[in-house]
Length: 322
Ligand code: AMP
Ligand code: MG
Image (cartoon, rainbow, N blue to C red; front, side, top):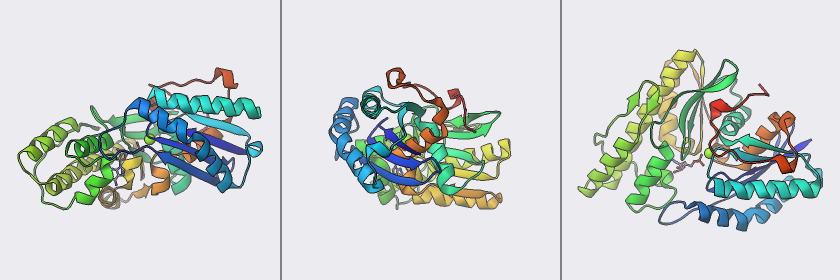
């Protein structure tokens, strides 16, 4: 049995194909990027519309399958921007009707956690989920995924993207900040409140310092050191609080080598396992949606009933598969 998953919540249009045993057969995507400026929802929809057929064809080709081999279609139904998500929903419905298949609309954030478990073999970790819009410390406790700490304002990825955009580095900003992060440390606001974090003050201060002539290298270095230290602190607090011995880093920011290094040191010091999801599976992609569809194969609906839920949070999801 095989599930085809469609991702379209934000910049990435992705299609993954995964067997019910958890074998990843294809994971193709096309991501919207700009040289200058950020993401505008209607531009994302146009991008996704224009690439969806090509991405599907590529995915089927790399899995060496045709649509007739697919048994289930999943799509990202939450959370995200409605205009690009609607492109994924419409495409999922069209394919489901054409090939007489059921649909399952999954939560994108939970899909990041589940693919992380599948790929790394982590058993019951604290999840540090750091993407563009999200920064959350999550763990499975008492029958559902609970958010122990989160950002009170911007997600870390978006903060880095905003900083990069304002100083003319383009989008996505995270990798560009990482490339330039080799200056000296300048002090920035350290925003930790319990297990919550805040990045807005750091962004404002860094932009002010940039206008005052502090170098890009110093600011990129200092943004990374300060924000990553904050994440290490809250992740450690959550691990102690829920008494878990593993940390799993997921989301697009997991690509950052310095962040991985700092978290690894923290985990070593407390005899815990550290898992980082490899690049291909850490950012948005279709394989995670397909695998979550497999896990939720009992939650399927007829194509007419499928819809999106743009604001659904991780802790609102009824966990039917654990
Ligand atoms: P996602 O929303 O999970 O697809 O992640 C996208 C976010 O990850 C964007 O905000 C990127 O700027 C950020 N990102 C990607 N690569 C890196 C990196 N090497 N360092 C920091 N942030 C990154
Ligand atoms: Mg994501």
